[in-house]
Length: 117
Image 1 (tube, rainbow, N blue to C red):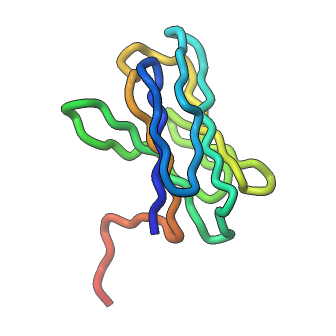
Image 2 (cartoon, helix red, strand yellow):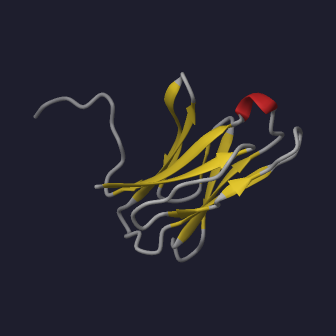
């Protein structure tokens, strides 16, 4: 099962559903860092958090996912010790990063290249 919430960074507002609660909106100056909070009070031990970016006309783009501290070249996902919330850290924000950022939870990690058994 996947639960979604949304946050718009540098533009209007957000919409949330299910048991995911996100930062409603963030106005960030270019060159600054931003921390997008995702509260997930009912996350279980096996659940993952996934972040996506949605730009009008470009569709949904996967950013990062994890169940504990995870980082890649652009993003860092940090969990609270009790796993009831997490933060997506983005450094040195650029105007082209203006988008809707979606936080989702699932009970399994998403796989794009599964082989039938």
